[in-house]
Amino acid sequence: VSQASAYVAPELSALPEEQLNAYISDPDFAAYDKMLKGVLKNKPHILSESEEALLASMGSMNTSYREIFHALDDVDFPFPTVKDPDGNDFKITHSGYSVALQSTDAAFRERAFKAYYEGYKGLINTITSIYTSGVQKDVCFARARKFNSCLEKALFYEEVSPEVYKTLLSTVEKNTRYLHEYMALRKKIIGADVMHVWDLHFPIFKNADMKLDYDEAFQLVMEGLAPLGEEYVGLLKYAKDNRWIDVYENRGKRAGAYSTGVFGVHPYVLLNHELTTHATFTLAHEMGHCLHTYYSNANQPYAKADYTIFVAEVASTVNEVLLLKHILAKTQDINMKKFLLSYYLDMFRTTLFRQTQFAEFEAKAHEMAETNQPMTVDTLSDFYGELNYRYYGDAVNRDEDIRYEWARIPHFYNAFYVYKYATGITSAINIASMILKEGQPAVDRYKAFLKSGGSDTPVELLKIAGVNLETEAPFNYAMQEFKAALDELTELTK
Image (cartoon, rainbow, N blue to C red; front, side):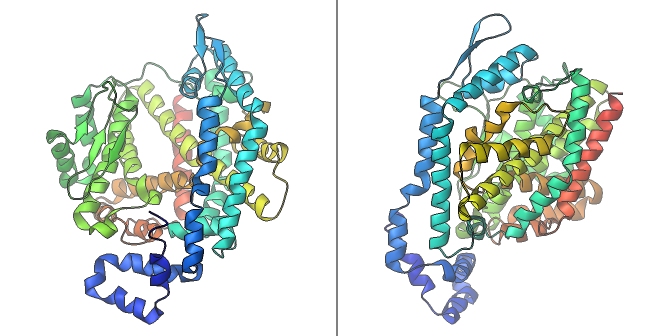
C-alpha cells in the first residue's frame, strides 16, 4: 500500500504554496485542512517521486529489527526454571518473571531475577547488534529526510517540538530526589538492610484489596467520575446498559484490557474482570479511552477523528486519578489509604520516572550513533547502569545485572515512543487536579479537548484542556503531586 500510494505526497507537495493555502481555506476541503497543513509543513522533507518510492520499498527495514528482536526474545530466549517458595519448578517466562517479582519471598525474587538476566547476558552480543543496527537505520532515514537528528525527525511527524522532550528529561532529572525519598521509605517499610532491584515490585501493603464484582466496580467508577458531570456519567451508564463492554474472561479471548473505536458505530471495550482493586482501576482506565473515542468520533469528521498516541493515554489516566482521589477521600481505612497512596506513587514511578529514564537512554543511544561514538555492550550497559543509579539513588543497591535491562525493552525498537507515557501521565495529573479544584470551567475545557480528536497538533490540543507542555509548569506540578502523596504516606507509616 505504501509503495502504491507513494506518489501522493510528492504530487501534493509539488503544488505551489499559494495553491495549497487556497485548498486549506476552501470550505469544501475543511475536513482535510489538517492533512493539507501537514503537506505544507512537510514540503522540505518530501523527496522526489522516485526517491519516495525507493524509501517506501525499504519500508520492511523499519520493522525488521523489531521482528528479529521479538523472534529472539519470544521464541529463542532460554526461559529458565527456578524453585518457587514451595520447592516446585517455576518457569521464568516474561509474564512469569513479573509474577515472581510480585512474590513476598525475597529469596524467590532474587532467584528469578538472576536467572532471567542470565538469559539476556547470554544473548547480549546478539541483542546489541540488533539494537545498534536499528539505531543506525534511524540515522539513515533521518538524514535521507534532511533532518538534523533522529529525535527531530520522530517528533516532527508527531507534530511535537523537541523542546517538549528536552523539558521532560531536564525537569524529571531535577526532581529525582523525590524518587530517592520514596525508595528510602520503601526500604524502611519492608525492613530491608539492603534493598535490591528485585525488591521494588511486590506490594508493601497487604489485605487492602477491594473485591468488587463488575456491577459494584462500575458503580464505584461512576461515583469517582462524578466531577466530570452528568453527561459523562450518563454516557458511562449508557455504554454499560447497551453492551459496549465484553466483561469476563473467556476461551480464546486475549488477556488484559483493550478499547477500540469504529467510526460511525460506537467504541468497544474488552475486559477480563476480576475481584481486585487493579481490575476496578482498569475499568476506569478503559472507559476513559472509550469516551475519548466517543466524543472525538461524534464531533469530528472521519479525517480528523483519530487522535494520536501522544494524547491517547490522557483520558484513561484522568479517570484513574479521579477514581483514586475519590476513594482516598471517602475511606476511613488507614490500610486502604496506605495501599492507594503506594499505588499512586508506583504509577508515577513506572510511568513518569521509568519511562523518562528509558527516553533518556534512547536519546543517548541515537546521539552516539549520530556522532560516530562506539555502540558496544559496555558503552550502552555502562550508561544504562549509571542512569539507573541516578534515578533510584542510594537506597537501592547497585546490582550489577540491572545494567543490562535496556536489552529486554521491546519499545526501544520503536524509537522515541516511550516518552509519551510520561507526558501523558503528566498531562492527566494536571487536568484531574484542575477539574477537582475549578469544577465546571475545567470540565468544559477538558470536554472540548476530548471532542477535538486529531484536529490540531497534540501539544495545541492539550492547551485546550489547560496544559502547556512547552513549559516546565505541568512537569513541576506533577512532581509536587508526587511529593505530596509521598509526604502523606510517610506520615501514615510513622
